[in-house]
Amino acid sequence: MRIALLRVGIDTGCGGIHGPLYSDGSFEYIPIPDVTGLSRLTYGDMIGRHGIPLADYFPLSMRDRARRTAVHCDPEFETFTYGDPTRNKAGLRRLKAGDLLVFYCGLEGYGFQSPPALYLIGILDVRAAGRATDFADEDLWELFSENFHVRHKRVLDQQRNDLVLVKGGSASRLLKKAYAISGNAIDSAGRPMKVLSHDMRKVFGNFGGRTSIQRSSPRWIDPRYVNRAYRFLERLD
Image 1 (cartoon, one colour):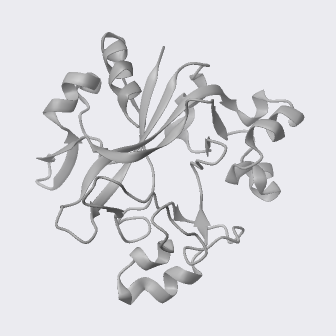
Image 2: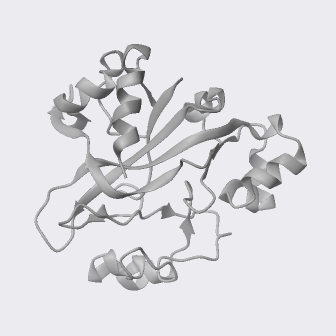
């Protein structure tokens, strides 16, 4: 079994905010903006699990614009798919049935004080993975029809050769409660950064010394920690 951790969702560098974390540990997953102009869904259209349009989580100065801003829903947690054509995600094509792709994102206290941190928010229990070119057209549509990169023909035509897709099985889920995994550190240039917390290194290992989880490159669990990480993730609801 293999397990990969991957950062997703809106942040201050892509979208302008952190996602909202409630005092009971529940949260809203807010996707990144759509830059293609193809999505018809906006932050004003999307109603979160707490019954609030996602646009309402933006500061007042950004809210009107957010209501009109299209959303790139990927990963999507309705049929549980993820897709990405970029080089640093290419390794995800090697995931096999039974592996796990674990998502985390940046969240900040909403209605109470809790500084920005990184939290586990969802899990794909892998059913299938590969490049788009690895799938017959009928299988591609059957498995990934709700994925942004497949649903929009123009995007698929442009990205097909590089597009990596992951389909989750029946145990896939968007968590009900977020689970904090980050600690604070300083990089070589003296800038603050998020790293895997010491407690979480006991679960996931230290990724071969690459403990920074600030960015969105996948972090692969050392085989020596896979069973421990699996047992931990299995308990999350």
